[in-house]
Length: 253
Image 1 (cartoon, rainbow, N blue to C red):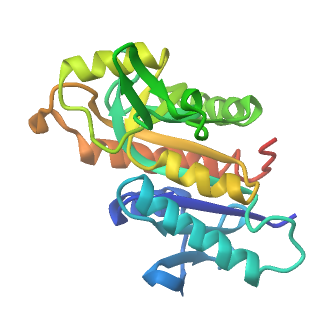
Image 2 (spheres, rainbow, N blue to C red):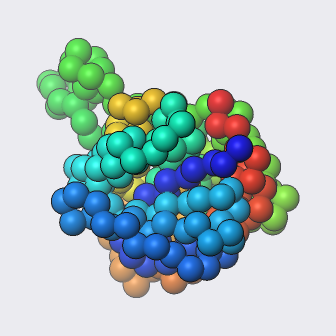
């Protein structure tokens, strides 16, 4: 079976780390409507036959539009497939909730959560689910997270499995970090794109997982403490491990 995987990042540096880690060689640049461009690897070096890497932009709205465009394009051009992809991965760097997810470690999403999609009320925060307007979380199959975690463990890569929060405003204070941690028990990381990717994937019935490398602690904004280079290197190493294991024999159910 020829597996098709779409990996979506926010920025090019993340996409470069993923592609390098997977050992992807030559690529075809596929222009999509709206100015998006897929990096399509079909030269035989891709671990599963074909891997598409998409730079979707920063924030849930931008990346949802990009992912939805890629899915629509694939559904119109692919033949003999029930879904345009077998798996979609939201990938990149993120803030980690200490002490669960230290800098340089990998976070695998047990769920992808829209952490600030709701309403503030005098009695506290209400999710969009509680308001009756939609959903604010996409669970990831335990079988999939378990296989990813096992591959990372076997490769000696420190990792955590837990909810990954999607926010539109990055946390910059200890108070906000504590609020999010209390509202979402077990939250391991905070980023800005996962829920947008997951919403687009759900519309096409494609499984989704978020894989993040931690570049900084969630809390007071301290750019001097960020380790972006280290996180990008960790991200590439993680995808190198997954490309030789989980993605080779893909069963996202």
